[in-house]
Image 1 (cartoon, rainbow, N blue to C red):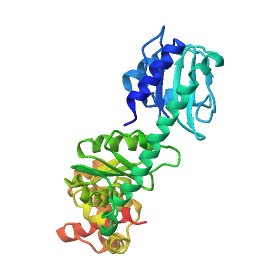
Image 2 (image 1 turned 60 degrees about the horizontal axis):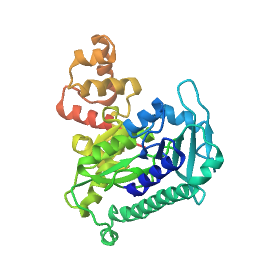
Image 3 (image 1 turned 180 degrees about the vertical axis):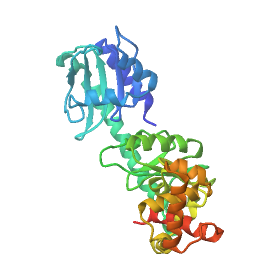
Image 4 (image 1 turned 180 degrees about the horizontal axis):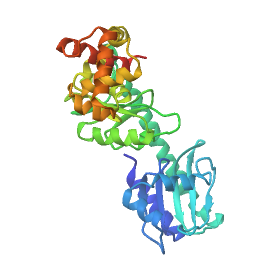
Length: 347
């Protein structure tokens, strides 16, 4: 993914010149390279190497020192559990792309010895980010619904591939360029990702966790030229994940059943279905939907709703009177069930 050998060489040379333990992370705190141990280390360095990523608690702690905005080395003092360390932001043309961590107390004069190495590491990370951006533009072409536009895609991919749609977050940012080799991503609403099929579930879960939102996976396609179909499915699956708790936070198109049909419907069709149950208020709608979700099993429905069975029957009867539907009739049950599901997808 990154020019890993070059980054490793930079870390090794840094450790040799300064005689300290060094690690290099991207700006999402994912470990990219680490040097041999010099002297004592603390649990943060140990866990960073073992997990290949710092924990969210560790990240929050260090970000309090302003490392994301700092233009030069940040000296972080020792605490009861952490050793002192220096964080060197890896900045290129005013943008921070990663961090070089040096364990121990170091004078700024000593850091001058590694200035060329710092600049080289920042440049490598910036090149990788730009390369990912260019690939992201090509990905948008490949996933287009316009066949003429797709014909201009210049990506050299092998299948099977799976598309992933992830809802962005205003509070969190994912470093898309740190995704594994062979995974293409483009920021947007939703974020578009194309991954080898065997990695898709892992990547979707990782991004959903990072953003704290929801994700949808399309069905895999053997030919990358058909990836646009998987992308369409992924967006539909994301929609289901966002509106149906059962499928939240990551919905797979292949597992959505009848919800796939609902996801394909436009607003007008959804409104038409929803009309069947429009007279029901929130409590009645929830009662009927729960009852139908459980196959019309009154005892299970009452237990799920936390009400007496007679209360359930009273509410079902009231719902029948308001809608004119007979919940003992198969067709009417289907109409009610689809109507209640359609309501969830209406804007």
